[in-house]
Amino acid sequence: MSVLPAPPEPISADPPGSTCRAFLTQSWLDLAFLHWAVDPTDVSQLLPTGTVPDTLDGATYVGLVPFRMHRVGWFRLPGVPYLGTFPETNIRLYTVDAQGRRGVVFRSLDASRLIPVAIARTVFQLPYLWSRMTIHRSRDTITYTSARRWPGPRGAYSRITVRPGERIHQPTELEHFLTARWGMHNYAFGRTAYLPNTHPRWPLHRAELIECDEDLTLAAGLPRSLGAPVSVLYSPGVAVRFGRPNASAGACADRRVQEPGDVPPSASKR
Image (cartoon, rainbow, N blue to C red; front, side, top):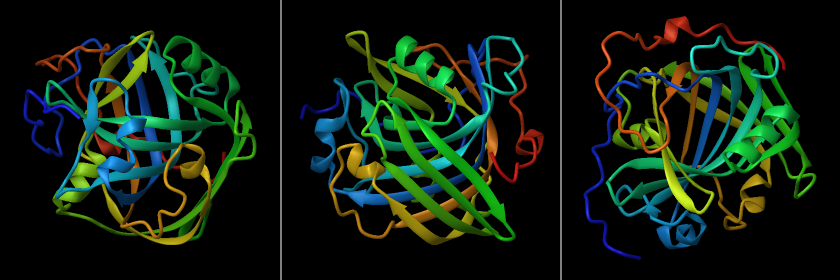
């Protein structure tokens, strides 16, 4: 593992700049954040060229994040109501590159719409997988289910139930580290690209984990026994803007980033 030529950028609840002329917009709604602490050596071989595990106090993390993708849109076009809205569950790792940019790497992204899965796999070479998925709200709990269809391993599954609790008004450094990630590293077409994003501060809530039955982490190449997660959070969601790959965030005064109040209400089931 080589020494990074630049120190990692500060851990910040706010994006380093605005995403001007965003080429991709979407909202992430009804998110559950489950995280496990792991030794960086356990995941270093799973990361793309040019990145190393991002750490906090010597540990890096594995994230399992089920949520509802809402109205994915391209350039200035409005978000697509059906094909652009679907449940998704991702397994992600935490990275930093030679420029000090902190990001995430997705080991898998299960989604319930076949066409977006095929486009993401072909155009961006992202590890999207077609799965049968639901998000169901019952009184004070939310249950996320997923069963993989294609390309496999067929049958890889998750069933997560959380009970959202009180709003977190002052998140810890770890909670910012796990949620406030302002880019994605992805190896595609022979090189590692960095895709920046911006969004408002996460509205985070404590969450009680009622059920966690899954083998998505195992299917993603992670250690078999992760034990109980060290962090369980919930968020009603944020609106997100993506810049072009490898672009740096810059000032943009004439575009408003949507606030959490702009996010549409939750759906009881998808």
